[in-house]
Structure formats: structure tokens, C-alpha cells
Length: 234
Image (cartoon, rainbow, N blue to C red):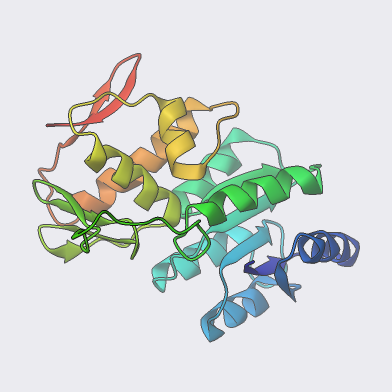
């Protein structure tokens, strides 16, 4: 399956999660603080990180910030006992892919992790390309997205995106001119068809816009459709 890093300073919870992930077929690596977790990611070979927010030496928010600043695009799931929308939006705004509030069931956490991994070509079911179709890249104006290689560019310049951001951008580029509801964007971006918090979806879109605007400050291609969702201008 996948090689998953679990970061938590609670030994009991770390043991429970390690057993649950191992039973689900994952290769598990653990760390008890943010700095140790960062060092393990830097070594390479990991597919996904699950980290608590409240950690010694380097908290989960700082860990996410450092990983994204260093260009690590692997999916990150944040765990927290502080069940507040502010924390959730902050975590996602820093670049986390998902956010799970304690207490939670291991089954629910594994389902969220599985949904993220299925969006990663390394763990997705293989799909056959039509004869003669070797290039998987899809384009719209200045945007180009390669779903297989998980790369995206704007005007030929590479965008540094998280897995969820990449999938949401792919959804837009595949459907220019079509309004996508927040629920649909969350389903396509995270494989999550549960309860949708509008502000969380807005956070993903805001990050996408910000990253594209870094190359083109006048970019207005992702349009807000009040009461309906978003669309990529055709």
C-alpha cells in the first residue's frame, strides 16, 4: 500500500494508529515531535503524513509550513483536539490536505487517508490510455495539468501544488466554463462526498488563485459564482 508517517507525542495514540494503519496494509513510520517528523520526510520515501497539531519542538502547523516551503507535495492530514473552524482553515491555508478533529474513529481516519491516496497516481488503479494517446497533459489557455505526473504549469512556469490543490485545478481545467459546486470540488479534490464546509473549499480555491497570481497578478480565470460555486472562465 503506502508508506505513512505518523507524528504524535501521545505514545498510546501513536501505538493505536500504528496498529490500525499496519493492519490496513500500510508501512508505518513514526515520530514524536515535529522536528523528527520533518527529518524523516527529508529522507524521502514517504507517501503521506498524518500529524497532530500540538507537538513539542515544532507544532503541526509549523511542520506543514516547513514541508510546503521545502517543496514537499505529499498529502498531509492534520489531527487536533481543538475543534475550531479557525484552526481548520489555518491548517488548510498552510497547505494541509485534510483535517480531522479528535476524538475520531480509526476507520474514519483510514477512509480519509485512503481517499487522498487514491488521488495519487502511485496508488490509483491503473487506467489504460486510448491508442495513440501518450501525453496525459490537459490544457486550457495558460494552464496545463498532467494528472499522471502530478505537475501543473501556468504560462510554462511550474506551480507548486498540494495533491488536493492539483486535483481541484485538474477539475477546473477539464471543465472550462462549467460551474462546479463546492461539494463537487471537494469530491474531486479529496474524494470526500461528506458534509461540505463552504469556507474550507474557499480556502483551497484561494490558495490556487494565490499561487497562479504569483506568476500573473492580473489572473482572474477562476470565477466565483455566487450561491453556486466556482468556474474556470472558458
